[in-house]
Image (cartoon, rainbow over all chains, first blue to last red; front, side, top):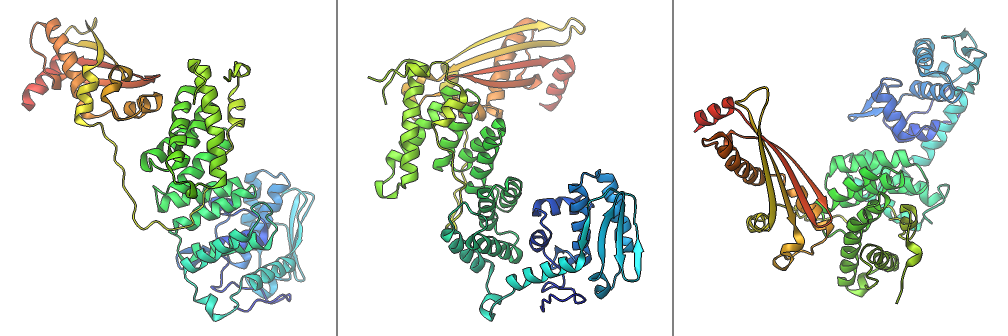
Amino acid sequence: MNPSSGTGAVPTAPSGAFSVAETARIVGVPEHRLRYWAQTGFVVPSRRDGGRPGYAFRDLVAVKVAKALLDAGLPLQRVRRSLDALRAGLPDDFDMLARVRVRCDHDRVIVQDRDLVFEPITGQLLLDFDVGTLEEQAATLLELSSPRGSQEIQRTAYGWFLMACEHERAWDGQDGSQESFRAAKHAYERALELDPEFAAAWTNLGGLVARVGDINAARDHFDEALRCDPEQPEAQANLAELALRSGDFEVAIAGYRQLLRSSPDYLDGDYGLARALLAVGGKAQALAHLERFCAAVDAMPSEERSGELEQRASCARSVAAKLRFELFDVPTC
Amino acid sequence: MPTFAHLSGSTPETWLAELPPLDWRRVSQIQLIRRVVREVMSPSALELLFAHSDHVVETGVDAGDPTRLYATVMVTMDLQRCRESLREPVDPATAQRVAELLVEARVRRRLAELAARQLSERAGREIPPDAIDLELSVRVDGCSILIDADAVTSSAALRAAERSR
């Protein structure tokens, strides 16, 4: 790979195509949306890289145009027509493509090059970007992502996973602009590029992006984890918790029940189910699950209990006592 | 002694606010060996539950088709009644788990037998359990499990049952 930043030499990914993750970072469209667009035929990556979709540079231009038009409020159908026309009108030659300027002038999408001006189809304003700039962004990203030595080139999926875990431990868990966050995300993505069936990497990547508020991407990643490993308790717990936080209480209850069926000893199952049941007023059942949670924590050796677990157990005991009082007039523990 | 009188009329939000949400779980260690958990009702448990249950069976004849007989079977299993015999804690959570497990062939068979007995009396001839179609619904009320079954039989179903024997 030889990333370049000069106009006229379009950067290429190591395989000649950009991965979904790389494309998402270059054009600022979430990965789950890119996958959705590909599934629905809206913007389909034109390359395959070892069975995985790969975006050619001209696909990046199409994604960028689609995002800008949708952000400007154009109806999906019109954007789709604009893209079809745009694809037909864009030059194939990379050198020419990098000199192209795409803009919207009132209700026209205009693609402009030294020798070429055309308006693919009627649209509405707000799009004006220099493809050369996009090229530079892509080149910068590739430079950041490029292997720094032969040791990294040979890293296995599990090696990337361990590296990601290490970066994640160094992260404060909140600030998505920190280098440790970006490095952890990149390493999980590399692990998944090498092994798309790596359930643990999907789960941790989902948790990572959930912490910075990208809930839709997190849901996609947890779903992928369960596709690879249908009984992984962490992904099950995360999907149920995500449903609970989204106000989808019945889905949360079903998710936690499924978690308890497949992993009856998983502590979060009883605690999470109790919270979900309380959300719909199921106090008697919630009490039973809180009691199970407290009993399981009490049965653990004290050195195995984290501070966070102790705190939750303390809250659970308090709420259980209040529920007992409300349900049975029995304020005992 | 705490009274918690302030909690009367608490909303779900109030309760939830007292329990911190779960943080996103991550996998830090790969599990080498996965246990596969399969939950079923133990044979003795089914006997015990039916022995401690109340049941009501109502029968009738279809007004439009007199060869078609139906029965409604209502069974109430109160776990509190047999708590001394059970290893698990008797509470609404256990009742819920048991209710999920009750939708199985052995339970359907027991309900069909209950319905068959009453339908045979009504018809004045023997109606075997396998000539009965059953629609089953199970719900939970506290520590009680409530089973409602709609049983239907007809001359066609009886002929089919006889042929299969």
